[in-house]
Amino acid sequence: MTDDFDDRRLHGLWQHGDAALAPLPLDEVKRRAARLGRLVQRRNRLEYGAAAIVVAGFTLYAIVLPGLLLKLGSLLVIAGALVVVWQLASRTSRADPGAEAADVRGFYRARLVREEHMLARVGLWYLGPLLPGLLTFMTGQAVLLGRTDPLGLMLFLALPLLLFAGIWWLNRRAAAMLRAQIERIDRAHTLEGDFS
Image (cartoon, rainbow, N blue to C red; front, side, top):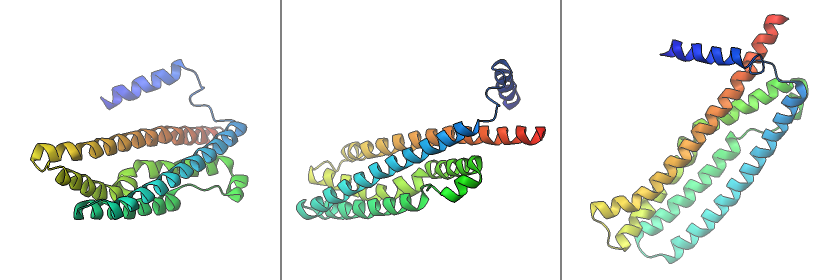
């Protein structure tokens, strides 16, 4: 089956000419690197803003809402949001003007690799820290509303689990798209090396 897939892929590349294998022009690499930098900055600002809203909201919940599970869940969500912000700041790719000037393609590839690794592991560093608090909070809501039967509890826990599954899937898909870009850069580098 893998050989058949590789044959179809090679056949598709042959039909579409050299465009899929052609090295990216330097101006295109610079444009894509700048665009990636803007996207990363915008994403980070949105994530930091969302984390601030989560921390403010769940701080209010921890103060106002009754019940130990709701208060504990709120505090765990706050801790999880702070871990996510710290992880995002440490994992995200940052512009390095010196590296960019030295080798634009290598710089762009390194940023893509860093983003791909971050997105591919979103379950560990992004969803994982938030999950205990959110599940505790939702369990507290179920207890508060008297829905401690298995079906009621499952319904309360299903929504965050489905939401997290969707976030995980979207990030894995984005990571796969970045892997395809990295492979294109690697193929172009290999082709350039063959002709030099």
